[in-house]
Length: 287
Image 1 (cartoon, rainbow, N blue to C red):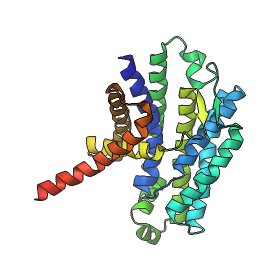
Image 2 (cartoon, one colour; image 1 turned 180 degrees about the horizontal axis):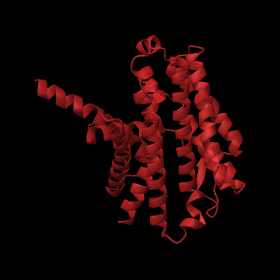
Image 3 (cartoon, rainbow, N blue to C red; image 1 turned 60 degrees about the vertical axis):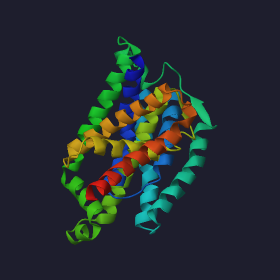
């Protein structure tokens, strides 16, 4: 039972990454590879701040760092007309060296007594209760803020810029600026997720961003298959649900005796199954 609760904790935590990927992948229709650089950037910045015992600013600095990484990609794409995938790849490649500079080595341990999950406010709770309460609280705040943003005038402009840039431009929307803000916000959330995951795991590593794009997409696509609804709030909830289900699937794989080193492989396989299955079902129905 404790293992299941721990898995749900991780699902809630990683869903913040998926929400960030959702902004670029689904709303802006922008395949942003920066995620694999901004995620460890957030972890590195968070770990660096925690070394100074500065819990209050550890996540804020991680968020700002991710925003700056997204800004680089957005400028390359929107103002220098670099192809979207290439712009993200250029940024994440440069961020590898930046992350090494920040950490000073390949990885950095975070003290057990100096992170968000060890705040005195929550010490009366058991470890599992503490993790669940904090991660659930973070996700509810992120969900409400993002849902609120999407229903503002800017949020609707963001959706329009992703759906039909030409029409959005004809309606007086500054498409380049809107997309830039969207990419910046997305990478800020992703870096924030990286900072939280680093605190949860107790370390930051320059290679922890490898494959996180697949993890984010898996949660989005699994959630869309489980909860089919056009409403934006329902879509955001489905992402959180998909992240938890994805983690439970990986737990099942582990319980079946597979090696944890195979998780990246299973992540790709799970994503492929959820993409292919509906298409095959549709083909059979047509026949």
